[in-house]
Amino acid sequence: MQFSELGLGPEVLQAISEVGYTTPTPIQEKAIPWVLQGRDVLGCAQTGTGKTASFTLPMIEILAQGRARARMPRSLILEPTRELAAQVADNFEIYGKYHKLNMALLIGGESFGDQVKKLERGVDVLIATPGRMIDLFERGNILLSDIKILVIDEADRMLDMGFIPDIERIVGLLPKLRQTLFFSATMPPEIRRLADQFLMNPREITVAPPASPAATVTQALAVAYDEDKRRALRHLLRTEDVKNAFIFCNRKKDVGILHQSLSKHGFNAGALHGDMVQSKRTETLEAFKQGSIDLLVCSDVAARGIDIKGVSHVFNFDVPFNAEDYVHRIGRTGRAGLTGRAFTIAAPEDGRLVQAIEKLIGREIPRVPIDGLETPELEFEESGRGRRRPRRKDEGRKDEGRKAEPRSARPSRSRTADRTEVRESATAGTMPEERAARPERTERPERSERPVRARPERTERPVQDRPERPVREDRRSRFPDRGEDRRRRRDEDDDRTPVIGFGDDVPAFILRAARPVRPAALPDSDAEG
DNA sequence: AAAAAAC
Image 1 (cartoon, chains in turn cyan, purple):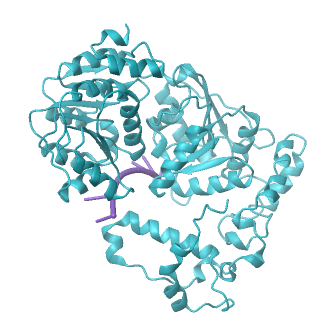
Image 2: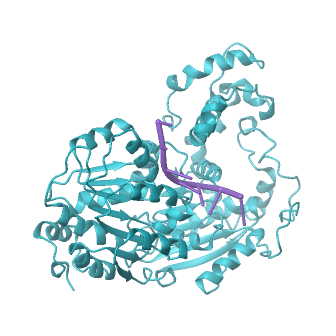
Image 3: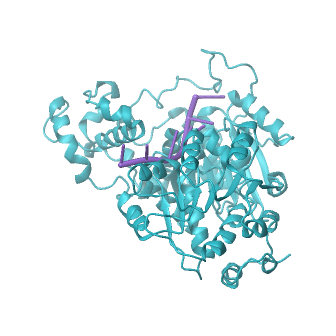
């Protein structure tokens, strides 16, 4: 079967062949002719099956006829994350090359102005995340009465993320007479109910998950004490032939920490999670795609659907809480017939999570030891409250350096420790690469390693002693995310903006008064390195 | 246990 047999026009076929594709994937083969006939589709397919092109290609064809009027888009595609929305937009750019389709990408974190302007001009394709979509609708910038095609992508993920009420609301605003394409990787009853509600006499298309990761991705699991995980990761990064890699963490906070740590050790890494400003998210993802960043430390925002060609490795720095997320994460590699390698670093207390994953994928993940590190046993007991976290036997002091010591007050080389130094010397022969990377740090000093003199005096004091700063409850409760975002940024600013001339005791009111003007006057936190 | 998404 060739693309040319599916009923697509010459312009689209030309664009497809320029990208280098000749044969449609199963879902494209089944869906495209049907969509071209104007029928509804219920697609049970994961990303990586060619799902996106299965709706973008016929949509370009259908929308080629007619033109959009101002503020009245002709089609709407709903995506769960901003990155996926952007990826679909890229798809329209590529395959719509020889068509004059107007497109608008409505996602949060970017200015309203451009999006509104585009809507005013009239768009054929609207690609949106639910929040921004509803916002713009409520402001009267979108009229939905001319929508002819609706695509709901990744419906099960929308469910997970609590978007279903939004989706139902949006669909309620659309004309009843329309074509609807509905995609989901899984079909739990709740999703099935939605599909029944939104679709009319759909063709149901189910395609096998993309060559199950077992086939193209070599998996391995390393068990390490929690405090050894970064070291274990670095070891893997240096011993594996890593071209580029996703490195997943379970928490946004840890994405930041790990990113800093890797950078400090001379790795070319970027960070991506949902609390970062959108411009940074876009920029980082683009840099990773282009290869100017080798390692992308990220949260599960990037676990599903992000399609980057030729990623050699996936590292799970944390075992994912959801077994299914494991499959999604490692599916970032081994794509398009290429092989990939996926390593998971598990702490002893992750036994149950590992068990759940192995049950889901139906096999045991081969264990690998890490040279020079003690390999603890996985534990499978209920993790009751107050149960002590398993620790390395040789660990002398408790958690010091991690929490108790303010980051900036640490002398430049101690970090987590003297105790790791001890270990390291014991294993010096087996891990020469640890040593080799050290000089890098003097060439590229990180903020936290600058001489104490250059740092704000206040940071030498324990965090709890910082003057309390007012938080505007009203705004925070309405926009919890933004509130957190701002507070975090302030904290970072506080780390490196000394108030000159007050010594250790800067009066709280000075700090308060200075704060509002400070962020604007500061260089961006990344401008320096 | 987390993450995702609106100014």
